[in-house]
Image (tube, rainbow, N blue to C red):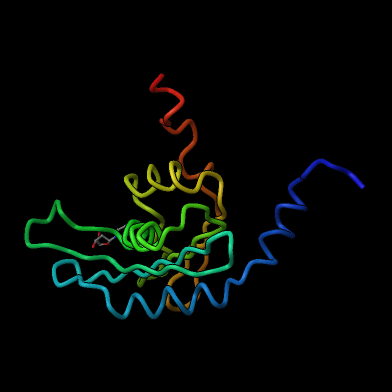
Length: 146
Ligand code: THU
């Protein structure tokens, strides 16, 4: 057996993930999104390394700059539950195109879940499969602070 992991292995790993459960959790959280300004509702579901799912929704504010994205909402929930190791994230949005994590969320993903698979889907099922390294190459990280 080869000890190297090629693109095919990565795809096999991805296929083994519980995407249906992640999608269901993201959709359920999205129902609770607080988005009275943009009306753009987002749900995110993080799979941790123990197999548990932590979901979040976007939380907007009349002071627009304070809006919290669903992805960071999911991380806050997981961290508060004592979870720090992640396996995948599912993001669900409306519209024709899958909504990808914003720049701020990409930076948070790179810090807390480097390299994990990211599946972005619309409620109607349009899909974009990617990963954190692709979304944010050359991320600024703690190593560079030394
Ligand atoms: N939003 C997210 O929840 N995640 C993203 O990665 C992109 C944007 C939210 C923020 C705001 O509440 C709404 O979508 C419109 O930008």
